[in-house]
Length: 359
Image 1 (cartoon, rainbow, N blue to C red):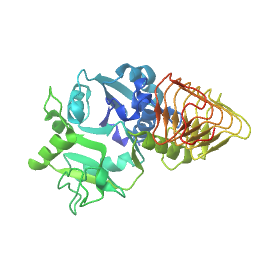
Image 2 (image 1 turned 45 degrees about the vertical axis):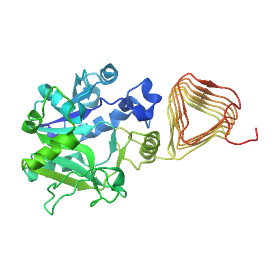
Image 3 (image 1 turned 90 degrees about the horizontal axis):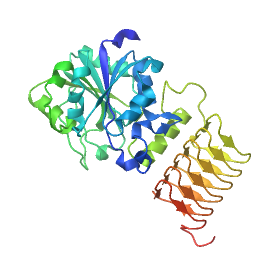
Image 4 (image 1 turned 60 degrees about the horizontal axis):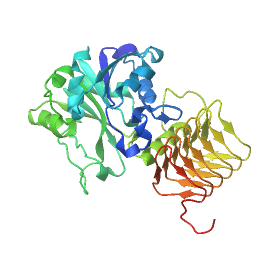
């Protein structure tokens, strides 16, 4: 699949990840473990699989972490370069900011928050075959109200960019992946924040550029919230979301080497147990994301929640739809429900937070 070596990839990974706090206080969102690998590894593996080799990461928040982990990209068969924004430039400004590193005439841009399964080669084929100036990957979703939607005509050409509305005219949404002809990146204004969705794309339509949609219904999830992060991780473990970075068997759980799981513990729903983590007897983990070194003690229940690095969940505690920060300690018999977030290092005493009366 080396046919796409003439295309560059750009990944925008500059976000603060505020919706995933407190986990993103210590690591940028694209580096959080997802099915046991930094989230970005899944996207990089898909890019390599499509035959694209030169990738530029547009970073700002905790920029150094990316280069420390991925280096020059050789382990993934990629040639990786890094550009750091000193002040926030928005999605369009972020793309324009990496222009000096780009070598190819076609540039495929990715939002680093998206877990996707679409065939990248097919998007590039659409771009080439329609002679487009810019091609957008559009994905069909069952409820488009939460997204801006992008209608296309019978030839697949984009006709408008519509803001979120309660009555969307189409189920096609912007999936956060674009192919630009290089000259259209050169046209993006410099030195100020620019939104690709609100400014660049509408201007392209206004000037009559050929903006093409590549529509499919492949796996797609924006991993911005804890709920989506947990579901995306579980979908990778269960094989619902594809990733070339995860060979081998898919199933109800993924337990990493060096983790200890006591007899009688139940791991279901796409649960991930990180390296060196310990799961006690009779614990029940359903759709849980347990980071490296965390401990879930005997009889505890963790459902659809993220347990940060080195955190501890005490005996018979319940964590449901929660985020527990690195090194926090949730005492025995505590109950944390419905979006509870515990900040790193916080200690909640035994029985200290309850939603029910009996202890």
